[in-house]
Image (cartoon, rainbow, N blue to C red; front, side, top):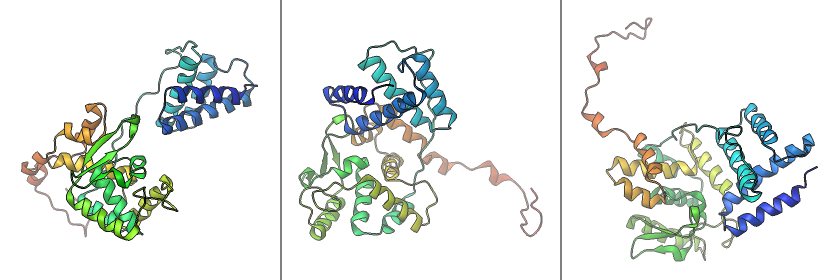
Length: 293
């Protein structure tokens, strides 16, 4: 029987020493605990052998787990085994699952407007608008404080964003004016968007449910989440001709290639001047009869 408490404590100490972001710590420890539970259920002796780890990953994949989930499992176990414990990791026996390339759903300007208008509370309307206007991640938005808003320089300071990095995000004066009205009504003391009380961070789940409800009310059939508004921020900026390097800086991406994915999501402006060959067809679509082309 493997001692879960010992290994979890050892892993927690490692994350503390490297000053790991809270979200990474939570994700990795959660995946690692599931692996240890699996090992105890099967009563393995050498739980960190390549053979046992391989069996666990294969079982996870056999259950049709999402690629991202299995990928985190792989990363969490590898980090503990190879880095914390200093054991050999056989990359041939334990290869990383291949990346699944999928493009996120992007809302049109009209759909973004409808989504915001359909929010149940004024607080959510302003919050959705804030995400779309800044491109911040949900975790970053939840931690924005009044003192982080520079209305003179038209900037929002993101403190300890992803990778524990600070950055400045430019915003239009119109957003500042909206935030002033929001402040007049809600009177936030510290956190801009607070939860049940002014000192409590709004829960991610609460915001996610609010977005889903607003999308349903607005009649939007696409898969929408708070992060969708971040995607829309980047994509709509690109469609308006904003520099990719500037967008990278605003989003807080380390690599330009991460930002470049939004190029695939843009509506091709050149296509507006192209005459589609379909328009040359001479067909008769009489829907009162059987379709004939």
